[in-house]
Image (tube, rainbow, N blue to C red; front, top):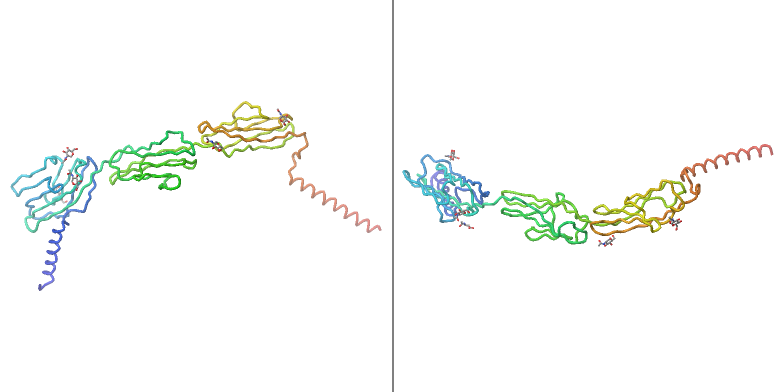
Length: 346
Ligand SMILES: *[C@@H]1O[C@H](CO)[C@@H](O)[C@H](O)[C@H]1NC(C)=O
Ligand SMILES: *[C@@H]1O[C@H](CO)[C@@H](O)[C@H](O)[C@H]1NC(C)=O
Ligand SMILES: *[C@@H]1O[C@H](CO)[C@@H](O)[C@H](O)[C@H]1NC(C)=O
Ligand SMILES: *[C@@H]1O[C@H](CO)[C@@H](O)[C@H](O)[C@H]1NC(C)=O
Ligand SMILES: *[C@@H]1O[C@H](CO)[C@@H](O)[C@H](O)[C@H]1NC(C)=O
């Protein structure tokens, strides 16, 4: 070794030999990803040489010939399953494989005999995926879903399913609390299901070449509960009175009213009396019914109709306070003036 140039050549040779031994070579590492029915291209890292290659051979799974060229003048051998499916670039060795089948998944080896120099080899793998389509979510039991019961959401799709994810309002769901997710994430179980579990669920099914989403709007029916009646407890005879009933319920509850145990016709959440009478006093019962959960609850409100003028009408507590203070000031002032004159005259 007498020059840097010969040293460089030696190292290059060693690297070339090691590369050959370990199969690293002129193809990128796999797996290359292909879609069923589409094509994949094995692009080599070879720059087109000055003289054409002597032979190029592409082999599938160790022993199946895809294409093997002969020294010029010669003819190619093409494997029976590959006619009309391949295009070989003879200056780079790159191969395009079209109309991919599932059974094209496997190992590919390229061996090239150049006009000068060592054999060139390359190994890689291909994985063919069927694109994912028709993703759906099915629920069990069928709707309506009632709070406190359990529900399962099942996510299915056709194609090569590699992964599934569950999401709700853009948030990734994970098992825990009342949620169980099966190992392959196909089934999401919620037990017991709560009102707050209502909402849009999304299942995202994917593989390296495609993704499909399925959505399901889960409605958890619940209630009625949290009932109340808003309105006055005392009014003067002749005044208008409005009682308003409310309840938390999915779906919306329907309402009925009773007065002293007698049903009042109608289904409004509001009860209005334009001009109250003494016999309007008594117990008002509002019953809320949820037709889906088949449950109902009620609440009672007492109303007392008083004589006209018996309730402080028109004056607020604040107004009364101000009037009292004004009177005190005037009286106080008058007393002060009287005392002054009495003292002066006395
Ligand atoms: C082969 O590949 C080279 C380099 O990518 C390109 O320039 C050339 O056009 C290709 N030949 C054919 C026949 O496609
Ligand atoms: C691969 O599958 C295709 C279509 O399913 C079939 O025609 C072909 O014979 C199969 N090839 C091999 C090597 O099994
Ligand atoms: C090719 O080899 C792979 C393993 O590397 C195997 O999974 C696949 O089934 C083989 N394909 C055929 C068509 O023999
Ligand atoms: C009906 O509603 C009541 C009050 O909210 C509740 O305690 C009960 O569990 C409900 N029954 C059913 C069958 O949902
Ligand atoms: C309802 O009951 C109240 C008190 O018990 C009574 O004052 C009122 O007259 C009753 N009204 C009717 C219509 O029954």
